[in-house]
Image (cartoon, rainbow, N blue to C red; front, side):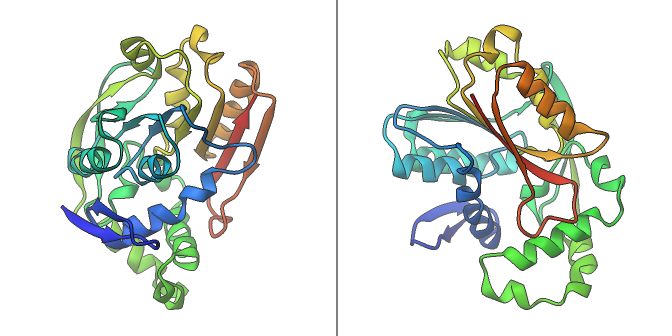
Length: 263
């Protein structure tokens, strides 16, 4: 486990310092189009990685309860350390993924790029250039100044390197509703989902009686086989009246779209 110093001097635990900087640069991007955090909120961070989003939330707001989900054991160890540093007992770091039912699933862990670890690697394979375009977009918008000077033609080489030495890891799965029941939660003020292709399954794990208690959601959607429209319709069905779909800068040529939804 390493440490990284973020742009404002905050020190966080990490696996790779450059990745920590990139994760931190995305935090504000989740908080737009009516998505915000207030004191006393209950937050679910699905696909939390090392927990930068929760760490920043605890720095700015009081009396939060954050439930962060990370299935990959090596990444979860770092998440747990950051949870203890920034939120203590109010920052719950759970070593599991969320899905439409409890069980287990094989995940692909990329040690060279932990944030890209996924149980849905086939999503990238449906478009062979997708991963390369995502890498190119990341380089153009990275917080490290030198990344922007890396020639675009190297994107394919970097993409292959990031996915090298991958490991298959068997991880537990639970559902949103299981966690709500277990902790007797009255609501979820913000449901943040960024879990590399499992976003629809996560939403399908919410029982009907729990939907009304979810106030806001921000979801990264891999729009494959009509998934974006399916999720938009699901949110409308459950009472979300303000829904914005937006491509993140640098990712216009990929299937990834961010959804912002509130009531």
